[in-house]
Image 1 (cartoon, helix red, strand yellow):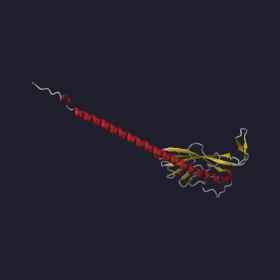
Image 2 (cartoon, helix red, strand yellow):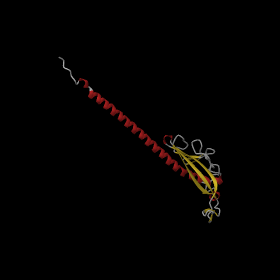
Image 3 (cartoon, one colour):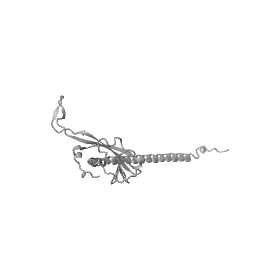
Image 4 (cartoon, rainbow, N blue to C red):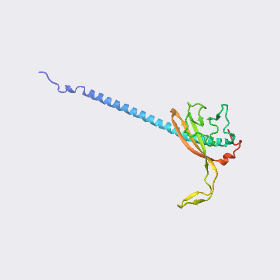
Length: 207
């Protein structure tokens, strides 16, 4: 009589179970690695974006200085061009619109590599490097009066009773081209008294 082994159907069960667990653990490990890689890329992109934004924000300060210096040069015809006609290099800044501070002579559009009044370079003139583009446009506005304010019909404060002259309001747009061709644009309004501009002499014009 032949004996029958009731446990023969369970042969290899432990091995199959172990292999299945190994596959599951491998898939979980791969998923964790992929998730970590994606999170690292997101964090890196966020850091680059913030860095580019703050560099653009800081660029508005450079744009304000350029607007001020160019405004003082209005009576002299704007910045003095350098070796290339219609262009002036001031340190690491290249100005391609020498008289942008004159009313309406600046660029209204947001800046890019094709449309700009000036640009700040890490390597002068190299658009392939990180750099900041500027468009700066000014318009003449009336300065609020400094006299006593008149009571309006509703009991609120009315307009000034005396004129305060005029000023130039400049819209300074700074576009930073940062790492990985990341781009960020910040706009700042800045103003200067027209009296100061009109009384500037050639000695006040630095460039």
